[in-house]
Image (tube, rainbow, N blue to C red; front, side, top):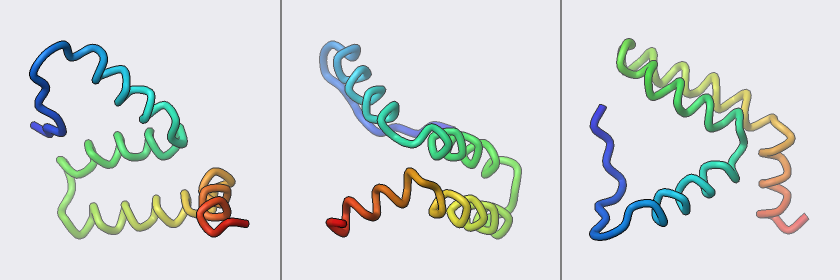
Length: 76
């Protein structure tokens, strides 16, 4: 797939741990779906990918995790 997010000049483990902690702090289901959708995109058309992403987003936005994030963002 060839995704590059960072180029690190020096020890990579400290940066990798920071990134891993950030990912681990996210909704486990959202992380799983993101990984699945990345693979899905390799096998499906752009339209099929967009439809699947919309379906997944529609499910995840209803989750307790997402509701709590929205409430925190809105200061409720």
